[in-house]
Length: 601
Image (cartoon, rainbow, N blue to C red; front, side, top):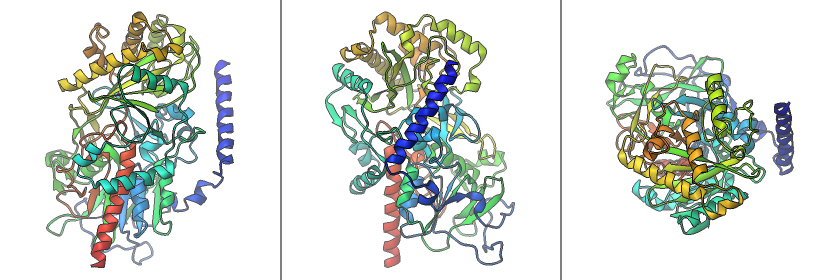
């Protein structure tokens, strides 16, 4: 009965939230606002021949016998980088944007802050997030929806540091024009709930200073950042940046699963000519770029999807490709290598009263390379185990991406026994998170098979470098200080015994598949290793200088680029979504300027 009542309350909230949103002027159906978005099955093209990726294309017939339409740019992946890139390029050229998932606009799990956890807990094929487990045993997720990571993340918006921009060689003037282009359309100042204020004040109390107030900038100390959730709790994703596109020049196909990039190999270097994709019915289509100078295929499929697609298209380590009978277009040993993920550990903070839900709004940026963030989630009754909330699950007492199918009866019973040692108030609380900003541990991505719908094999080798482990211990000690700081006393009383109980609960929680050790709470190094989780800031696999050049052109072939987080050596800022969207706009402007200059000369 309690569950039914809670469900009805949630339904009522969604209904009211929808009314509130509509009252703010969002009355236009998304189909009217984005007329260029359509099902991939509506694309008319000849069925591609079963020839290998290295085959050449001499002509481009259509079903009707006439010449098939060619695009100036084909963008593969309608995510955080792909949407602003496609919108920008469409100002002057014909663009086809292919997205493997659906739209975020009518998806309530995506649209509302209150449902943040539901998409991550949904492991169905139609979910906006695709669940995977790295070979480290850590649960993870990748976006499968227009808007990419901005449609499933915690919404925090903060820029990269000026030193980061300088180190990667970006044009600072254009960077500082590209960030505001994004911010004016989808970024908001957070409501800043009392719990987040306590976190800010607590960080200052333990020495993470100065207080930098509300700012998008990356500054040492404590700050409040932006959010892509508005004051009504409605999410605004990178998909909304498509409203800045020229609708006459843009086609967006959803549920278009790109199988490979196709090449003409008759010249000195292979030349990308198009892509093969499956529509929502499983039918194959082939789309082509124009033969005009400057036309390109641009891969923006994210840190998992982009190296995976290059490998499937024949660009990667020769031996690995041949084992899967993939025709080698270009032998590059670095595709999929040196992958990184920013390891995160968390402590659950018990509250003495109900606290409103909030996601990441405040961050402490330390000079030790550790970032401290916080959220507050759902509370449960002392014996409730009926409603699984995925990433913010109070049932396990700390952050977790464990999906419902993995929660066995044995695991639930073990949880119930362990929960008796924790105060009831612990299940009405928030989370303190520490993230290592610049991990030195490296992993890799490899194909398991040639099915693009399947996750590749990924390992991040968390804490394999000793510096990462030292940073984690520093972060955990800072979290412990924060929990005991004066500003937290309005919410909870945490003495040493309570904190140790919370650490013990974190060890026994189902946060990953890593075996536990008996001395976890005595050794913070072991605690870090055994309770590591992810904040989905994985990056690398298509590094600049190894796979792409400084203009993000894929080395060894013509007319192919990769523009997304797979090219990053380090994750920018405390949370990367701002910079991933920025780089989409930034590179779109750079490509336009260069092509228009050449055509005018």
